[in-house]
Amino acid sequence: MDVLPKVVSVSILAMEALKGRVSPSLKFYNQLVEDLKMEWAGHNGEKALIYPLSQLENNKYLIFHGLRLQGDGYTVQLDVYLISLYFSLILEAKNWAGEVCFKKNPKQVVRIVNDVTQGMPNPVEQVKMQQHNIKKWLVDNQLPSIPIEGYAVFGSSTIVTIEKGYYEAEKFICKTDCLYSTIRKMETLYKTPVLTHEKLHEIKTQLLEKNTPLIKNLYEHYRFERSVIITGVRCPQCLVLGMKYKRKQWCCACGCNSKNAHIQALRDYLLLFGPAISNREMRWFLHLPSKSITSKLIAEVKLEKVGSTRKARYKLPWDLVYSTSFKSEKKV
Ligand SMILES: [Zn+2]
Image 1 (cartoon, protein in one colour):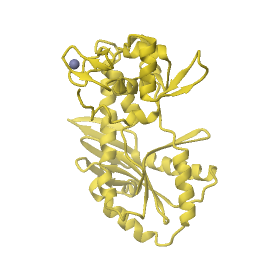
Image 2 (spheres, protein in one colour):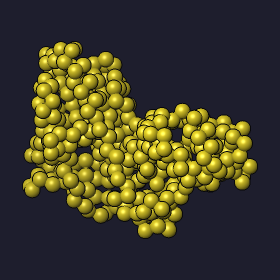
Image 3 (spheres, rainbow, N blue to C red):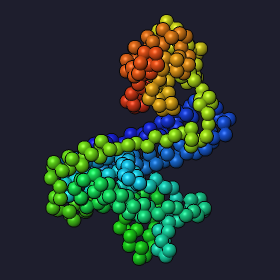
């Protein structure tokens, strides 16, 4: 059962929002495009785990995707975490292209892509560190201890070789197509429940409550000023920014009219500037003609007011990030 389903991370969405609102001639643009490629590859690697996990007995496991927990001086970030009454399991998705070799002496991981050999961070050590940290996190939060297994899971197209005698790599490495059978095999090793249903529920509640998704500060990361961000409402048809608000609808030079094209712009605002917006900021970002029209739109979107009347700001809900209204938008 997916308790924390797989979604596109806020970081990816914010980077996409940024990419769509800056000029490609800016210095950091190419880096942003490259980083996005990596992020999407990671996302797709994690998505590849969904099918084998969906084949498991439905109510046996609680499945958390993209869990991020903070402890005192450490962070636990898990692509997938499964918990049952019997054991728990960390899965680290590795969507690596090419051939990957786990060398024993010294312990190292080498990747070969297009005849280029490259040293990589060792997924075995990464999984071990995560096991250590989640164990510590459970103790720090006064939660019951539970066996913690872990795998780095490589996509079926990656060629993985493990040097003879590197037993830890054999223990911690798995391929996507073997994941289901590996978990089923593990079930035969853990036959006695170590948790009650109440304790399992307690762990689930704590994990969901303390999950803190990473929101990368893009301004610091790419070192740019807010002024480089191109404002305006994007046309859902021709995708050009700068629709005009006339008679309660958005009009584009291409002839497209829309009643709710501002939703996507507000979503970009939330991702790029954070969850609070004033009347003035909304007027600036959406290119609205007056304060009163902006107020009407704020009322229509039903934004919650925060602060005193003079300095009032409005709360943009994080749900907006996963809003599908833009996609299902009907042209008028
Ligand atoms: Zn247009």
